[in-house]
Length: 582
Image 1 (cartoon, one colour):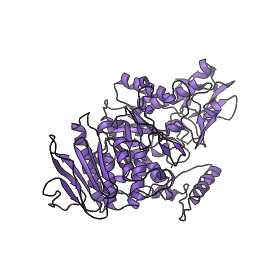
Image 2 (cartoon, rainbow, N blue to C red):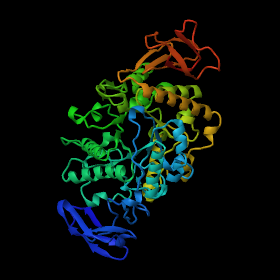
Image 3 (tube, helix red, strand yellow):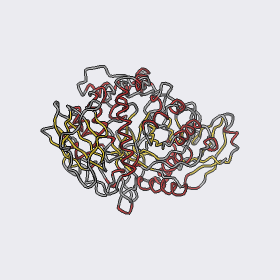
Image 4 (cartoon, helix red, strand yellow):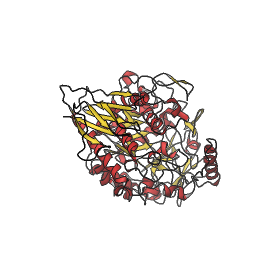
């Protein structure tokens, strides 16, 4: 096999195997190569640059002994896949974000695979895995990965990951992977010793920025694009979620995101696969999903944070941080119909104007949620909305999210109102880094005048407490909320099957009376957010038909849902109704 590594400034390069050192030869463009029998590397290998301390391969495919251990060769026949899979398009999609380590008690790919039938029954179409690139220790969120080509050993071997993806496909589930291309973690990060992978011209909140536009950045871009294609090709993922693209700094004429999108879509066309790239972004910038011909980057979708912020602000009343920018029902209705609340107006939180109008952005190009790993885990005690709100309001939020015109994302356990938190947890092996993380977390929330105990990210109990309790979905009150989600997702699926491309979302609301009405593609949702029952007018009858009740959170079986004229619904306090066209 050809072993190849990029180290443009090196004067010599050796591969250090278990029982020998072998010199590599200088090749073109700063690469070093050696043609070796794979048996030489069977027990692992590292590289020595200019005779220095051996370190792992930047493109290591397997790090069974962790970020400082030897690299291991992984031959792609080990990752053989089943028949070609065609995922549902995003406009018919419901994404389920999960963390392999806390989704089940065992925290492995095999254990997660055993729960796939549950996700199918729920109506999920896309499973999104939090990052898998190897990071220090055996537990963490994954955003401090350092071996981008090697899946974390704690969850299982590479072939078990490939098997998990195949098992999803066999059940009709697409699989997305969260990848981090804006920074690397600090511990085990040897990348900078090989070449100019990082830049000090800009900084991210989490560490050195990646060099996408400075000298020698062509090979840095190649490294990242090769990584994306590896996950899609060798493991069979159907798309990638790109973490925090607002912290990817690329000032060349062709942005790295545009180059990445072009490469992924070329590969998808060659392999006859519908692959998607979804950006996490807080920019409210439609250029992320506009085509290159229109001056955009050509990504398939991006997260629309304003929806979450408007929902959370309205239902919890919290006004700290970015919630200060959101005011009530008007913002909630705008988020529900347009995706962006901020389209260029002044943001108090940012102290400047923010966003631009989402012109030529289709609903399926925006992913929305009421909860996700960040919004829960970055709270002091990892509280879910189910720990902050009553069941009726949880049902209202579910209807707003699932029936929005956009692509809904649910976070593991949200659908049954899980009582387990999702905390911030780490397993740093470097004692100084571990101490800094623990102390930094405590200081962060002390500045918010938080008076309760802050869970220590390094404590194993913090991780264990974050695991889902799978006895909950079958018992009250969780079972009722789970059934509500199932019914909403079924209504959404039926709407997607018959949706007219010309359909446009419409909303009406009354701030004083506290009701909201939302109508999209033949499905009407009506909400009474007031503390007392009230009648809410339905849209007038049209040639398309009248409204038929499909789901209600406030009605006993057999109860009447309309007044005698059929034009108004009598809705209980905090009640939610969903209607379909007859």
